Length: 312
Image 1: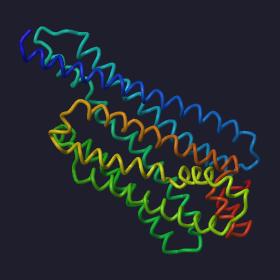
Image 2 (image 1 turned 90 degrees about the vertical axis):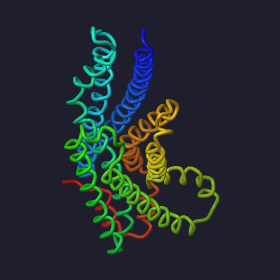
Image 3 (image 1 turned 60 degrees about the vertical axis):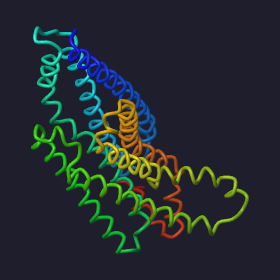
Image 4 (image 1 turned 30 degrees about the horizontal axis):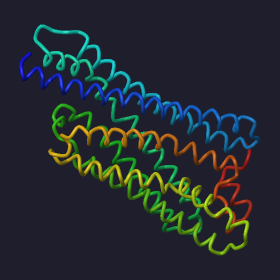
């Protein structure tokens, strides 16, 4: 075996390990997502609040279709690499096998960006929606959230289209201008929404006192971090940091960095699908700290309209 073949074999082995990790983590988060959807569906089906149920069911369908799509792509990549890159040996050697695997995965390369983007957009929509609930009396925040949500959607869709159009030309370029714009804009809308929700909730809870609230303060804070998008925002910020490091040829060449980046990326994608389900669970179980804050300053009629507690 030539030194070139040995180097290619090392690359093949590293790539196979990365794909195994990718399949395991994506399958795990997909299973958790299905479990959460089943639990929430069991809550929704007997619910008399048909308006809310239709919103939840429509959201579940979009989340599950997108997450299923992404999981199929990950498994397809792994299967193609295993079959054409390793199992079906060619006389031309490992390099030809790698080229054959790459040729077989071209179609999957085109569809790969879409499910991830859809899941992230759904998470962004939920964060913006929770902030919108607390901004009913503020035209400025409503206009800002709506405008940023529209711009965020346009940028992310344009980024996916551009990635498809320039697929072969940009294989050596990890990130382009649209990638950075879509990432930073998504982070910005999550940061603004999270800060707005946290500020409104802090004002509400700072006016409360008593042992019952003190005992539940930690739980309320944890639920608020989940529903306000605080955890989601932190994950997106960390993702941006990983992407910045990935632009360095020295760092991105490190196999340990590739493993860490892959693990974190799967965590972000998994959480982007689980986040809407977690929010809906809080709402359905009437433990939403955002709704509690909203109720404190709104009339019952307004609250029912915002939370979806009405029937057709």
